[in-house]
Image 1: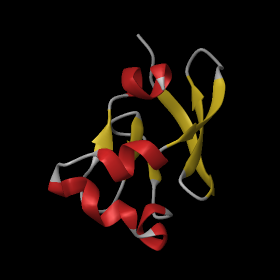
Image 2 (image 1 turned 30 degrees about the vertical axis):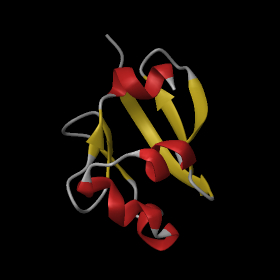
Image 3 (image 1 turned 120 degrees about the vertical axis):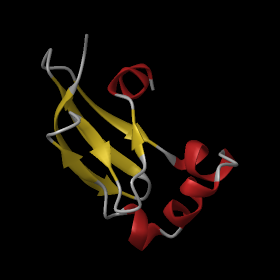
Length: 78
């Protein structure tokens, strides 16, 4: 099982992630943000809001202030 141990906003719609197995990657969320139909993704289209992404150590993944989080397994495959 994988989980996030650190994350940082990079640029545009990109986030750098480090996983518990020491894998590091930059994930580009552009397609996800603009193709996702669920309303919870709508605020992320504003780049200033997207930049508010943070690592949530309680859930071991990334989160935005509106409560949106993405499963670490999904992020690992992206």
